[in-house]
Length: 167
Image 1: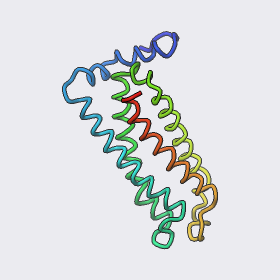
Image 2: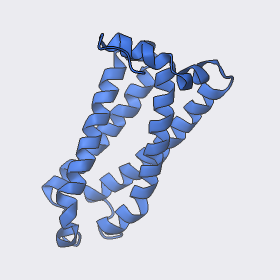
Image 3: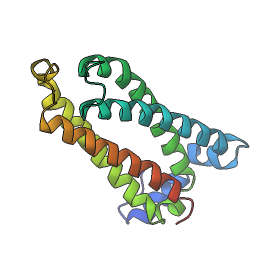
């Protein structure tokens, strides 16, 4: 049962009291195992996403098409995102008030939102017409901007994730 509307602190306290959060906090090896899954998920997300973004920016344009890069790289990135998101949510729940109280957490969440909007705009926008531009020398500006925004936001997400432990 969700708490009455009493502010974010009440929501965070409620989240910490859920059984999954309690399980993560009190069961030996669970939190550290989630950290490992989170890091592996980030690697599987950010590595392929970076390669795809670099392709949008022009790297490897003579070697692989954007469609081929998307077909090979994006499923791996999606699987990495799922692993990172699930493990991250579980770790957050276990210490929601402490994590939310850091200066890096709101920046990380904002960057995650920007990254998600960027992915959606790319796939609902310029990528729908990829057949028209995949063979041209330079990808359209919208595709290059999406690649650049993705590179910056995912680097920021990783950096802020590390900074959560220190801020």
